[in-house]
Amino acid sequence: MKKSYKKILALTLVMLLALAPMVFAVESLTPAEAAHLSFGNDKNFTILQVSDIQDGPGLRSSTAKFLKKSLEDVKPDLVVLTGDNISGGNCLTMEATAKAIDKFMSIYEAYGVPVVSAFGNHDSEGVATREEQMAMYESYSCFIGFDEGPALSGTGTYNVPIFSSTDSEKVAYNLWVIDSGDYDEINGGYAHVQPDQIDWYVNKSNQLKAANGGTVVNSMLFQHIIVPEIYDALIEVKPFTNGSVPKNGKHYILDPEVTRKGVMGEGPCPPTVNGRQFDAIVNQGDVVAMFFGHDHTNSFEVSHMGLDLVCTPTAGLGSYGDRETRGARVITINEDRTHTYDTYLVRYDDYLDFDSLINFDYKFLSTFWDIVAPVMQFVMLIESIFSVF
Image (cartoon, rainbow, N blue to C red; front, top):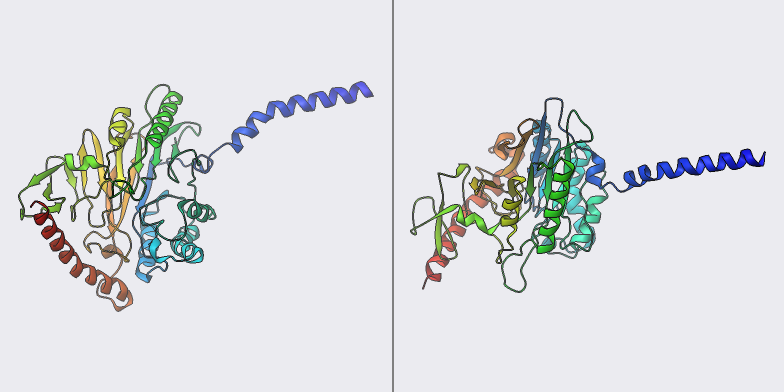
């Protein structure tokens, strides 16, 4: 009897040891991996990029309507928020910050769509730190983003794998979500992606490549602040050139040779310091396109050194923007053509009647910003001219 008992105990221990790696593997999955996003039966995967909502701590009724209607129309597989999701400076308490986040996250929760998010420069201007806000996002079951940990600069730099429609174990595509920082306290202006974040990206990209038999896993990258190299893709022109925008004493237009579509309503605002993120990405060769927010009236898609740089305008009504472009970006990837993608904007005008009294806040605020925008451009033009002297 004792021998039989010992045999049963030994067998049980062997089975537990055999299962231990499996249990550990399940527990070690990131939230994004555990969500196991995959291409559909039609081989497509659709992303809705929503940037610069910035309404907080409340949410305008027309903004809420737009967010809901865009979900119903696009039916995305994933929503990517690319920063300035709230107006942090207006959120003077932790409760106000949580309320601001809840106003839009509760919409995504109700629709059951997975969400990931990057932070922008305005998100953490209030009392709640990025880490505290990340915890608020993580309280929603639809949120699959996370933080790699305190050892890595920033909060919320991670990757989101998209698995094959025919092989549930194969990562067929990858999404990078990067915290591009807020402000450069030493040099002034905006912050840049830090060296350790770039090293993390390169190492993770190499891991994905190795797991894919030595072939790069094509990917997209989402962050708030655009890279400095955008100015290498523009054309510098004389002041008052038709369609030009001023920036730092110079004037620029989109280069038609490398512009797929969209408009440039303001001078892009990259970091003060070039952290060489763009160089690392070009050298790695896995990123097809980088998607940004930050510049509310820019919606252009340009190509530079084989990499697309895509700006998405504001999706909220709490800050400046252009009625013609105010909205969100739809991105569709096909599993059989991962080296390319399709994209277009859904706009407030697509879903809301501008003249309707029901959408009074949309009509009023859009008109207000349409009046303010030319004034802002004129001020920037004057500042640009005088900065030369």
